[in-house]
Length: 400
Ligand code: ATP
Ligand code: MG
Image (cartoon, rainbow, N blue to C red; front, side, top):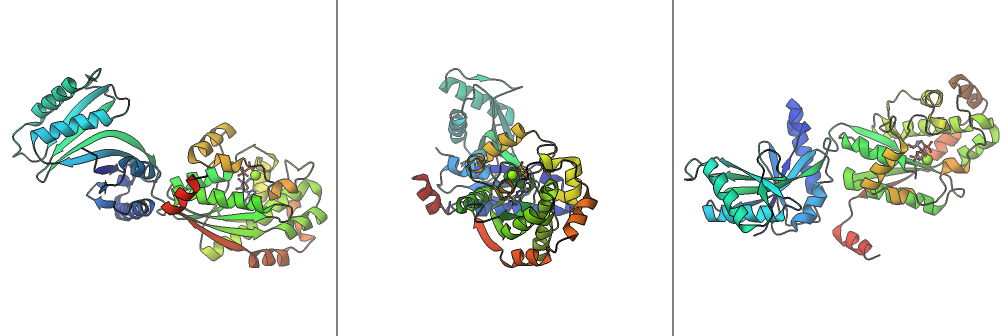
């Protein structure tokens, strides 16, 4: 016997009333894209669930991928068998044996086909007895079992489902709009992007680099982060903006204490132009209150002053350790800690003002004309699109 399908349950989506259909369709399409390296897999939609039909693909490998798709609450392996006592017994025993680490169980039978001669309660007893006499050290616990094995006897066949695996939660990516993520090579911004995706937001990214002060490897690091983030976002487009000239000018002509504030304001101005062009309505950053000089309340206010776009800051109230935990979990941490210089660290002032004023920032900026530099940076932007790796590429990389 072998599991031949995965049952997909979606939680919060069910609450969305009228939008429900579009949410389901998005989930269906995201899931199919995610599973495109398993060509035999088919996805079936029913009224309130989806079933991933494995058609011989490896159940555990498919499950792992499904667990990275937002909008899914939980999943279980299932097997479809003929409607007979013997095959249901065999399937229930198999499901128990496959439930890793489970010491206690409960059987819940639902008989949709009333023609089936064994009543649900009796079926629970029969299956419980069958499992107890064919395993060791396993007991029944109807209140708090490690695994609840569900049996559904329908007209066409019987289905046996095993333990619940947690889904990624959230909402299907692409159902709540689009954001432009300011992606640095640090630990925080990829986590911020991941959390935005979790709320159903499609993410595009903008990255500022300052060659030759920042190396090719620093840029590659950001591209690797973007590639990694497609595990959750399906695809990710990165706009790389050359920022050297602007930074040099800030360094030369702006007061040292304000250079950080003004640099951030320039980043936001340029980002706004990119967002307009791409019809994106918000920004997302990895800022976390009080973490560094540019992230004090005064600083955020002075930086934010150049745009009316909402800035989503998913990490605003998180501690660094919590952020690191997430970055480890989502696989961006090891890339983020590669030691290459970021454009902000290269030009970091000795004593950045922790309480800059927006009026002063504007006053300083107006003493110099940045408009040509901004235009030029936008003209020279490079766009790189990422999508999930094909299995051949993924395998190739595993060799190293
Ligand atoms: P991160 O770990 O994300 O770099 P951080 O704690 O180092 O964050 P800062 O360097 O002050 O904090 O950056 C704050 C936010 O500004 C980042 O989270 C990111 O959203 C944005 N940002 C910083 N540098 C860049 C860059 N070179 N390109 C694009 N966005 C950037
Ligand atoms: Mg940084």
